[in-house]
Image 1 (cartoon, rainbow, N blue to C red):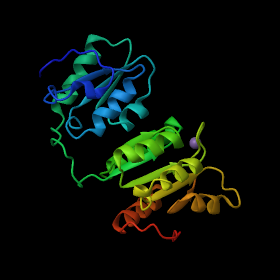
Image 2: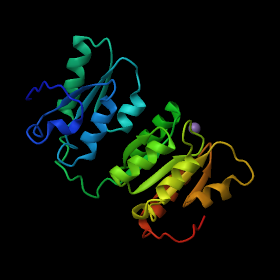
Image 3: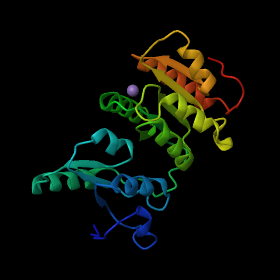
Image 4: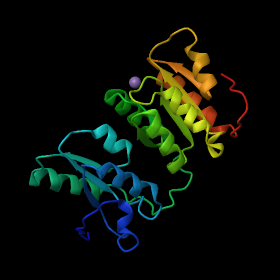
Length: 231
Ligand code: MN
């Protein structure tokens, strides 16, 4: 496995000479998440397994952003070796473009436990998942990654899901992107508020995963229509 040492400020600083790397280690710190995202957003580097090394454990975010492994400091020799062994044993990912085999779902969820549950669930069902932590990040990632569908938590800090959906719908290219809104507060009028903001479907938490999977399947089969929501 070729070993590369480089000082990164952005993932794009690697281009174009190092896209044949067998794996990549990213020390997370500002702007480590940004480096990971730009690596995963670019079809030249998307296939390179990335190991996140961080002082603060945030596995949900690491995997949500597309990391292959996540290590929390202090990293021992054993941790590193077994992580690299797991990567070497994993089936080689096809070189980009990834194609339509694994539809990309953008998950906007601020709660780690929920994010982990949804990421596991969606990955197991053959979806690729990218994670956003608030509505603003969701709108930016929707533009950068062009997911097939968005799962949007409504209650998030900073920019909530309602505003996130409005920002996505404000982009003409994303007008037909299916958005499933998830809310923990089944308040009267909440559903209408979500639909007005641009949700294609609406679920109150706790979400029954089977129903959610069915709704996602239906939305992905349906040709994108920017018309009025049907549920
Ligand atoms: Mn939340």
